[in-house]
Image (cartoon, rainbow, N blue to C red; front, side, top):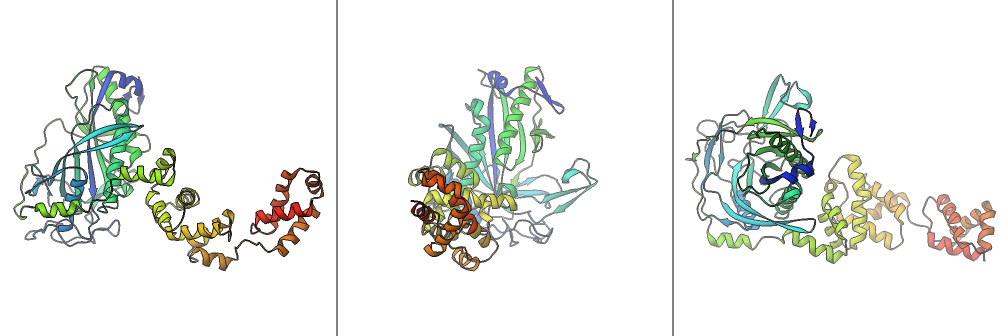
Length: 501
């Protein structure tokens, strides 16, 4: 047994030898509708606090909500993609609780009548498939955001006071809730990560969310409990709230399993509570107790009519579903000739759509992967932006690769072209022309540079004359350096061998 902070933990392998984890995952997806769930305020990330509010999303007396039709459509499409049944009739409810980020003192949500229910999906981890049952996917609105002042790094602990930003209040949310996930054993954290990744990819493919976990548009409440091996009864669970990265989901669950195992093994009990994950330490800390059933005093929302999607509309929406992300990955892996490891790296980097668009624009798949996973990925990391936000389009990357294949530029010059494109100097062809980056293949200029290199390196020239052809690399390097990397290396090699017999 060891300790992390104030909590004892058990080595992970020891914990899994004694206890069986049971998961429950609640994924919240912010929709990318133009306006909020029940009013006309714009949905945008960031901005000055409290500039996107109105009487409806602030819950002022006399204001009346109206359901966002696009949000309902998105909810149905998500439900269908998760193989759920779509309700013929459902309604909203008021979930009553008092907290500063809920300006109405209730959240408009769905309680016992969700729009989608009884679904199922599969995820794959290390070649093994895990079935996950979906209990429900329901519509609701997001809360506002608390800004804690005076503490460390904006945290509540140590803060002197808090400020409220209600811009996010009322943003359309779909909450996807699994049934208990059993039988994952030691792979439980990885299965949870794979499931949330699948949800992220799915809603992105559906184009109903920008799925940016770092901005909170996909986040997960991760529940886990332990039971002794061989026992059927569930243990008491904890719920780690609002985890917003795949890595953090895996780390938070791994830590919770080791922490709960240490408690149970020492004869103590797990407190049923919410917990918060600390990215820096990889640990969780207590939030609020959930030992007693919370009474939210749900009752039907009196200001909204029920939602009753026709079967014709549901089937019409079913016809709009894209290819399932897992099937798409398998198809593209085969079409592009990628290894499983290459495709896994592409997915992790968020480069799949970019590579596909580059291929559609005319590039082969492997060169497209090379540019997006290499130079452009480094540029994204250096500037602290997502790969999809770098200032170079798939069409421009395809044009760049075309210039390389035409031997207008080489790979080294291509990196300078990328710098020019990212600096706003135009498309690759324009950058090549403006910077004078085209490869020199004129025999006159190359011959002169080769003569200079031979004259400056007589020992190397003698080695080549004696049959050590591999020594030509040193002269080629000298010519390339003299011509700032713009010489046609193949033609330089030919000239050197011609001149030295």
